[in-house]
Amino acid sequence: MIPSRIRKKSIHLAGILASFVGAVSAVQAADPFVVTASNATANQLLVFSPSGKLLQTLSTNGAGGATGNAGGVQTSNGLIAVVNFGSQSVSIFQVGNNGLSLTQVVPTVANPVSIAFSDDHLYILGATQVESHAIVGNYISATADGASRLLVGDGSAAQVGFLDQQIIVSEKSNVIETFDLLHDGAISGNPTLVAGIPSDAGIAVNGNEPFGMATSGKDAYVTIAHKNQLALVRADAIVDSGFTTENAPCWASLTGSYIFTSNTASKDLSRFVVHGRNIILDAAVATPQNFAGNVTDNASGSGLVAAIDGSGGFTGTSHLTIFNMDGDGNLTNAGISGVIPGAINGVAIVPSRF
Figure 1: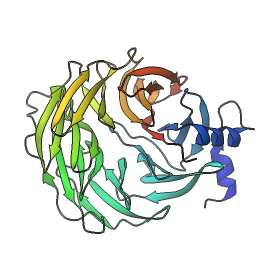
Figure 2: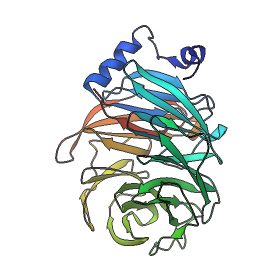
Figure 3: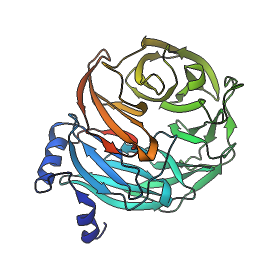
């Protein structure tokens, strides 16, 4: 546990502090909630209700600065992990009866941009390599039990995802690669280049190329933005694809049989239905309205879809928009945050545990 003086300093509400414990506990009891990271020099975890109300802010005790990535905030089994790109660490928060608390700051081998959970490991993608940290109960090992260098490692690393006995990584230099895992879940060995990646001829270096992903079992659905494409990766090869009429589907999330892609240039989301090898564009524009800025990362689950948008980068502004999702994948507005300074990074939906 962190010292109480740090915890008191790092937990504060925008506008009102006196009742935050009751507010957050009420959200846990009745509703999921949505988290993102401020990504500022003094990085913070921002906690929102499904209606877009800011409930809590907590210091990560680290520095932000990630860009061009997805999966910078992830959650699993009552834990929330947040990348601190600028201070080369990942912060771990625990969901408890009395709200959220910062329990660890895990040092990383390289500046982290994306993270993924399995049942027994946390996988951390850096600019040049990917590493694995064992999970025991609610504790993340501070020492990596495996690490491997990326195929390119030019700083264009975008996202990491967990597969059955593998992890998968995208680099925006037109590379998708997999890494085999040892029987205990640790990373080992060299990466394998996924076959069938479309050519990026004529595309600016690290432009719109393989970006985001959503994984399920042995399958990964990877967005290839320069082709407006959602590709199914299975057994180290692209085996099928679906296409959207919208521009630059950069990031993706999966809930049930629905995948939502963040179409950065079109400022909207598309909805796909996936079943086996089939990838079907179900709604080219799935959102009730376009986003104010370029939409980046999104998350889905617990009957919600949440997406972040922004303009102007680190000196600009961002928003978090939350939608209710019905059984047919249709979205209706649930709430939107106020204007958030800077370029927030990563988004996750934390299910109710009570």
